[in-house]
Length: 346
Length: 274
Image 1: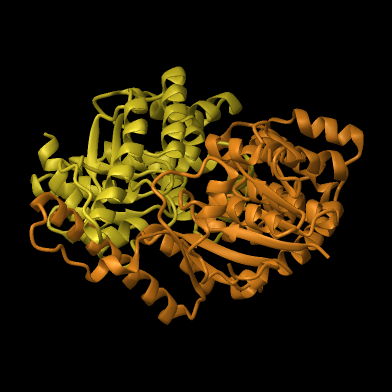
Image 2 (image 1 turned 30 degrees about the vertical axis):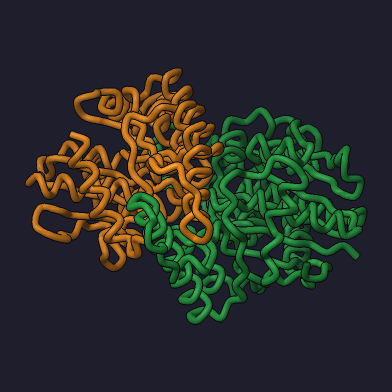
């Protein structure tokens, strides 16, 4: 049985680092562990031993139980066409200007690609633990909604509306109700833009059954995963983290913990400088004490308002650049729900 | 337009610039282009609406709402009136906007440009999409021109392109942090902007920059620990500030609690820039 851990949260809070650190800890505790990342910082990619972008998991040279894969979201999206459409349609889709645009700009596309790949790795049953560093879009919420959104795009309310329901064949026959509106659209957009979009959607429609079925599989994998939300104490990422408590119930994956990253030592909040301390150092302590206090208030408010399990990771000024550094990052994090990821505290 | 990597402080900088304009007696419109929340928090107000609301004398703020912007765009710029927000055309167009490239972006940027051309404001300050999406956004008028051979939307797109490129009308601010990923992303954005020539070269602002600690002592206890942490963070920031020297730096605001206070402090800093 493969355990799945999803590391979610806003961009820039250290999600990838947390995913990697957890991965190192797990591998060193004897679990065969795969860390799946999206676009890591170069120093972190080096530490994980994944310098090449590619969807194939690689074992780490110095840590035999630690595997890593770096996702190429656009390649995964193209796989939708090759997997779910017949070869002729797939080739036509790959060449299509709208398909390229949709794979790059459709809001859920990167999230869908990551979720699809992650589910594939989990289903392979080749690892004890698969840790997924999710794309930051929507603070990670998008990741859960992506399979349904993808099916909606492919199943297409736009397509149904233009063609009037059931599939009419290769050529779109515009339904009567749509006609007057299409005339307006033509004058706005130029003559055949909507028709070209409709033809693209008709091709994409042939992948619908496959995409919808795959979407349900992905959703099952996501629903059985352990979710961690990573944030710093800054208002913007905290707002994203709150979404997991305000908007998530429908998606039925409640976070096992909110991990506050870059936490200052609690003791600083009340610390005062002894007599004889220089003004510069005294003022420096005072401002970091104020920051410590702000961090503590943020955590306490989050936990009392949403009843979330709060965990913390100490602020390390230099980002870790090797496996030991990554493992050390979680040394003070006894408040992490370690059992949820198959490990014991410490 | 204020862009930057997610989490770098775009909304705070947008709000700070808007407050600065208001302090100088300008008629300011602050516009949230992305998802709601960031900008309104920095102004200490409830949710913003599509219709600009006056937050204090001279300062208005609004939230971009695609369906409203589309109807306004069709009515005012293309002369198609009498459509409703939940009518079939708006619904179909909204679905089209999620499929066809450039449509969503051109509606958003079109609204900003419309407000600039209006005589209601001295300055329009937009909390623009993050740098990751900035490319498709700034390129939207060109994309439309390539996809649509004729039609009124194409004529509009060409006007927008000219206005974006006009340095006296449009300025871009990119907010970054002195850390690896934000600096790398900012460098990529700057290189792309230089290549595409869609707007004049942006102003780069580094946010949360620490000052150098002038006392080298490390006494035992929290005083020394705080000094050590500060020096290490400062040294790490210097690597990235040297790699991408910003036009301006904003200080790390220790212990500032509310987004409203952050915006006010930013406006204070901007006063010192000029």
